Structures are given as C-alpha cells and as structure tokens.
Amino acid sequence: MAAAAASRELFTSGVRAVLHTWPVLQIAVDNGFGGVYGQQKADWMVDVVQQYFHDNADLQQSEIEDFIADLMDQEFDTVVDDGSLPQVSLSLLQMFSQWQQGALQQLQLKVNTMTQKRERAKVQAPPTVSNNDDEEEMQVMESAPSVSRTPPAPPQEEDDGWTVVRKRK
Image (cartoon, rainbow, N blue to C red; front, side):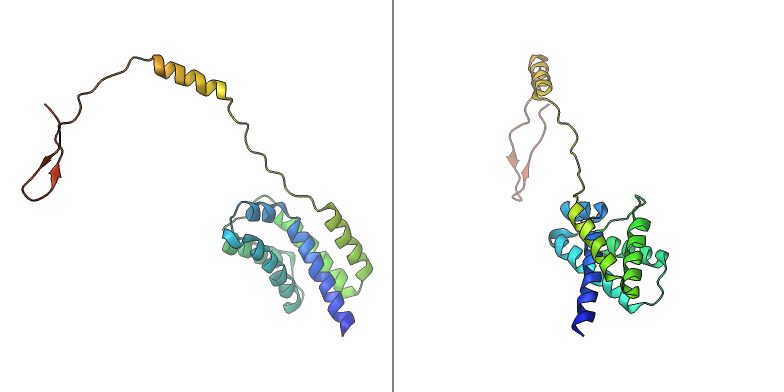
C-alpha cells in the first residue's frame, strides 16, 4: 500500500512540475489573475488535475486540454491561446502513461529534470520614458500663454437650503 501511495505521489509531483513551470499559469499567478489566493489555486489545480487522471480511464489529449482550459478560465479568468495547452496536456498524458506502466524511474527522471530547470517566465515592462522628456513638456507648458477665465459668481443660498452656483455674465 505504501508503494502505491508513493508512486501516486510521484505522478502528483509530475503534474506539479508541469503546471508550475507552465508560463501561462506562472503569469496568471504572478499578476493576480486568480485574486489574492492565486498561488493556492495553482496548488489546488495540481491536485484536481491528478485526480482527473485517476478518475477517468483512457483520457484523450483534447479532453485534458478542455479540462485545463476550463480550470484556467474559471479560476484565473484566463483564456489560453498561446498554443501551449496541447504541449502541457501531452506532457501530462505521457507522464500518466509512464505511471500506469510502472516506469517510475523514467517518470522520476523526467520530474527531476523539469524541477531542476524550473525556469520562471520573464515578463519585461516596456522601457520607461526618460525624465528629460517630462521636463521639456513642463517647460513648454510653462512658457505657453495662459488663458484667463472669469471666475464663477459667488454661491447664493436659496430659500430651500440649496446652494446654487451661477455663472457670471
């Protein structure tokens, strides 16, 4: 029984490695698409996906894609359209197949490789505008002729307690 639990945990580690190195999920979590509990949702997603594999026999890649796409949409308000979903689904399907066949050493090697490479998606902010441009705009604005307007008339209080502001003529 302990061996079965350990091998199931190995598959769960594989699912975790795939999902946590997936740039779409990383970006969704890092940018708060899932709200303040985004990281907890990502961890929960690992458990839900591994359970989905165990509960359904003979899953097809398209079924896995649809399931993960629904999770991303519901939990992170994210539509995955970068083409990575088929790759993630195929990787999960291969890991599950290895787990079912008892190729635990191969699965462990794959998990170790993925967790060692565990690269974070890098999102770069657009280059900032230098302060010199802002200073030049301020100088131009300061040197521009000013247009004066007549100030509004002082407010007058009506009999009903309301204050009415009227424009001077």
